[in-house]
Amino acid sequence: MSTVKMNEFVLVAQRMQRVDDVRPATDVFKLPTMIRAALDERLAEVLSFDSQQQSVGAIRTRSVTQRREAIANLGEYLRDGFRFIQGVPRYEISEPDREAALTAYGWQGKQMGDLKTDSRVLSLARQAIALSSTLQPVNARYPAALLTLIQGELDTIAASEGTVGVGGRQQATRSRDEAQKLLQKVIARVRFYYSAMSDDTDTTAELAKLGLQPRRINHQRRLKSEPVVEGEPTP
Image (cartoon, rainbow, N blue to C red; front, side):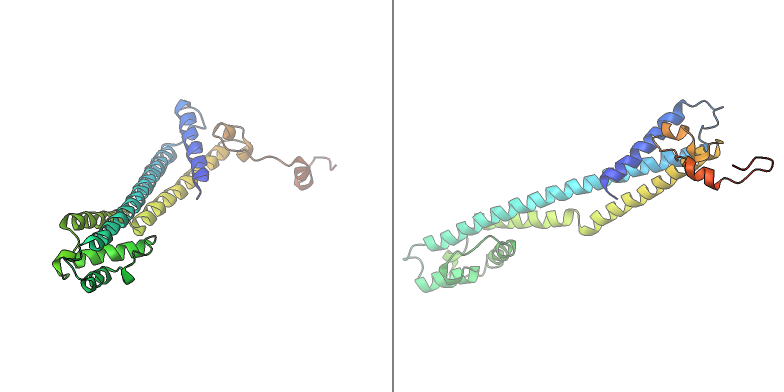
């Protein structure tokens, strides 16, 4: 159900509450206790589940933002790592060892390449952590401070992905939708009650007080379909 449609039912239910609150107990349109309790309960459930669903959405948005920021930071840290290896003086590392280190870290052909895809950034970052204590020669390893920063961003990404999974979002939406269906049903029960309490049935003007449209009478059709009452002259 769309948010606009859901809001319409909430507004109708709230108007029903306000109208019923001011009706005296002797008013035939005063809702019976059972129906009023159901109206109050189901409206409260809709508002609660809608709030939860919006909260889940907000958390998800924050998680996506955190992930994007972490990916961007990783890209910068990986570039720092690439430049670090390239900057090791020739008297400290041979060119074959430099090339081997770059290749081991994922920099093929001694080129930085494209860091625009999340998968490549994450692959290079995880590879950096995996090689943190095994890469040879030692002076070609990324600095410990840089590895700490890379690991921190990987942890942020892992936390953001686990905050609200697909299942959590779907369950919140399902709960809200089920509550909305029950609210629709109790609104229909109120309409039926009003119709039952008036000789005008579902054309009673009292329905308009609730924000509901009374049924309009098609007089032309009624003239054609009304039964002939005994003793009444036939037109």
